Image (cartoon, rainbow, N blue to C red; front, side):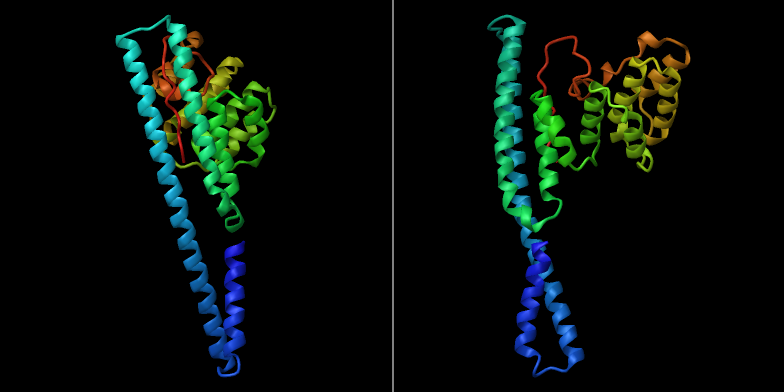
Length: 267
């Protein structure tokens, strides 16, 4: 990208000045060092800028979450309406906070010409925020322009493929988990996909997925319990509710009680 182009331009200028006084071998070494130095310096400056923006957004996110938590605590101790009205008030405040986060993503724009993947990374964050706002049409339109690499973005795409009856759902899951490393953070991914299989009454497939999850999630009580339930043909008792907020954030099921959705994750 521009970093490499600028490095080459600087090297060319240095070469134009020194080619008459240096032998060819020394000139080649000098120009190579100039390119490397310029590239490293530019990359460092870009990372510093990106880090500054990241810290600003993380601070904003913490501020929003604290405000939402404060509202929830006040409503629990001093109710000011029906549960539905209070939930609507919290959701309005949360959506306003997410809009602030989406607007803040514009701070990354100066980096687009300098980094090949930066725009896709920002699109991925924007897509996750839009999903929380339930703007699913916009999410679907943005997904092809995202980097679907982390568990959160993979889960969101799985959800949208499931909701849209996409025939590629199984292939996508297998592709994303084929070489996945064992990590407890993979739990939600396997929980979501196994739930989808159960809804489709593909119980044997769900059992195989949960057996694989034993290794890929380093073992998880919720997934292990669901595996035992399916193995014993207790299909109706299958549940991911014990995963709490991270499960409800996928909006595949509604929680049993009023909640504040605090999954404003930011990568």
